[in-house]
Image 1 (cartoon, helix red, strand yellow):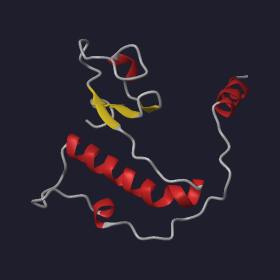
Image 2 (cartoon, helix red, strand yellow):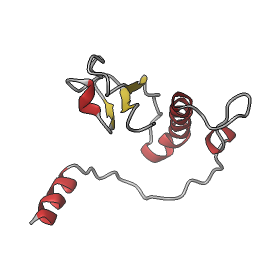
Image 3 (spheres, one colour):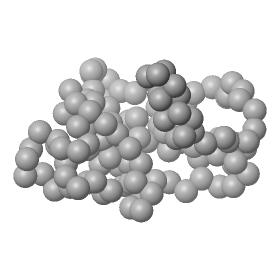
Image 4 (spheres, one colour):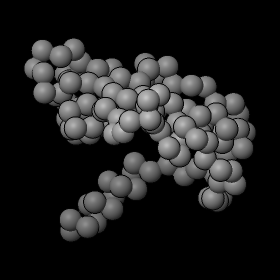
Length: 123
């Protein structure tokens, strides 16, 4: 019964995207393949890792979106970490309070924002 319920929930949230999956035919750029600080020291802080990851994602979508969806990519306007452990933190877009984002990340189309739990996802 649980498996059936889970199946219904998962398929109810799915969206069919037309096309055919394939491996990208290009090499990753240096920024995507090996993020480093200007000094070359690693590891990156959580803020640096998030900034590097979001820049890499935007770069990938700029180069791949047209081929996949036949239209130009528009960069996401806001990438924002949220301090979910702070009970006084302002609510991020699309949720009532910061704690609602605990251990989560999501895209809020109403604000064109990607937000994530800075404490739980990038310790």
